[in-house]
Image 1 (cartoon, one colour):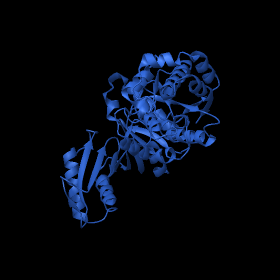
Image 2 (cartoon, one colour; image 1 turned 120 degrees about the vertical axis):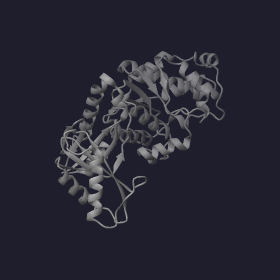
Image 3 (cartoon, helix red, strand yellow; image 1 turned 45 degrees about the horizontal axis):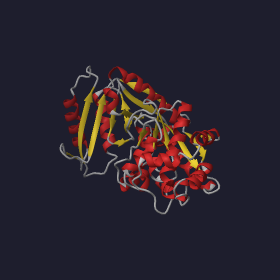
Image 4 (tube, one colour; image 1 turned 90 degrees about the vertical axis):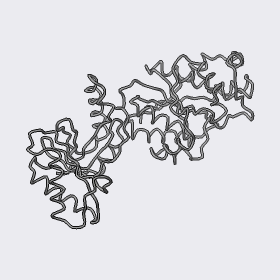
Length: 381
């Protein structure tokens, strides 16, 4: 019988009395991504297995579930040495000759008459006796032939890395300030990978930003749903706020004041929804609004914690993750958002909090934020 072996992140095993809770959430998340698939889920001595006719499709879906560390295509047989050795022989013949291998056995079922070392030695010897062109290499083999002996026995060669992390939803919630750029979707992915339920907020400046820019952000959110399942995207009308800032505030402070208003809107919405934190894709020093001073001035606008998972990362590293998770090609589509259209020629790079507070004191901050959030659009993906 062909099955998928699911291995959860090692961190989950360190959770002590909370381990059961983490495993329940992980299992439920797996069920959610497989809601359209025919499968059977069962456990053999703490190992999780999935039986399905559509192994490749199911494997690709489960690999994206946070909390899954590795996944392997395994063959199952009964707990009988003769059955194990014949299945191992059959399996290795699928590989080209001149292949080196090593047999590794884990005997979780202590009633099995042979020890782990004895099974490995005898199975390896049986393969060598009944094939030609295969050799054993215990140091650097081409293949690891892994045998697990539990209530049943399982044989597999390759383990594929999954996304790892913590089960999605075990570590409270955050509001991600999602733009159409490369960075913020990566930040959202990294927050979600730590088990944080991630909602998105996007600031739309109609008619200065096009519907294509909005659709681009929706597409990025859809990609994130491949990892998070359901995703709530909140679209905030931001034009009136930006016009007020442009009319009444110094031009070189436009960007930093705009960022403070974005943080305020995100905080207001989060408070309404019971969300505990904010998250951004900011990386220190990457642009003028992301200097140390600018980040501190942005933080001053709200009482809520702002997480910045990319804060010390290089742009090339961020781009690599974007490619890996599938957001990069969408992020580089040439549709400008409000952050790129309303940019002063010479933005202040080392703002001071007391100066920015004085500049924005001419604005009706509370009413502008409330009106923008009251008129939000919510899309559930």
